[in-house]
Image 1 (tube, rainbow, N blue to C red):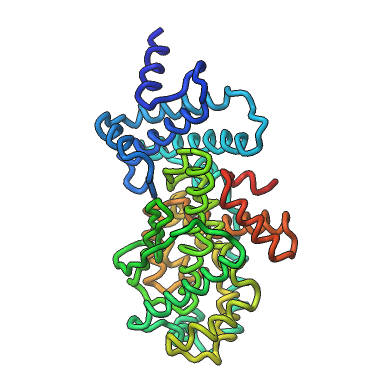
Image 2 (spheres, rainbow, N blue to C red):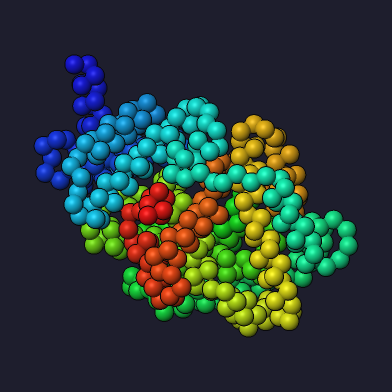
Length: 427
């Protein structure tokens, strides 16, 4: 009896659905939003965006649920969702699976905040519904050796690479002009294939003292605030990277389509909140990174940047081909970041050793490697979402669309407009 009474109080606290509720999924969604908001009061990074009813946040802040209450509420709501009859409608089935898995990730994050220690792979599976592959030192050593043959000069590869890249730094006084030109290019290419909500827009700000290089803060009403960190030099390729990843067809488009198609058209309130430490992040980051390739496939990117961005930045466009050949090889080292994070968070190496490992195998400058370790300290296994997420999204889109460019865009747009989980990408 006491257990049932405690459960009932949790259902009242978070507004959870009951067995006699005529609209159990909608009420479960409201309860989910309130649970996420409650967790955000304990975990400053947890709520990445919220544009739902402001009174829900006020209610949560007035009640101040404890971590134990949040965990119990999330467990009860997850069990309730799983006990519902399997929906026959495809989108409703995806919705129920999405809510259930997001709640499981919330439970895992509560445990971590309370002090539970998980191995890197255990954490990424629990929170992001995916595990990154393991790679040996020899795997990265072979890639570094391949890169050494392409980078001019003599001496250690990291020094040669740093010297080579210096010729491709965007001057600070030209950064805004270059970035806005990149945004225009990414947006125009996206609009050729996707219909965006009317009035969508975003604002750009330049910031410092952050552990990340760029961030999209979605505001709701189809608007985003994009922040670009200028702590470290910004190379010419980062303009398209950030414009596509944070903007078109990346985070800004993803969030705008979710708001239009799921929140406004269907009334699914769960998408008014975005919990950062959840499976949704792998879809968000993976689609944002793959969005760069779908907007600028193959050699189109280097050609476009050579024509449109190099002149604005005052850089030598004749060296663009060489630069992107080196960049393509360097990008193959991205999984070194996962390996460094895995070893560091599993206690096998120290923060200093992780930075050294990133310099050796990811070929990051010492300053950039230290910044990356700060990111790992703050976001932990989140690092898998960028490279593994991109690979999973790419494989999903190309498996369903083949080489047809227009069909790839259609499959990509459908992915951005539906409640998918990382485990769905294998289907």
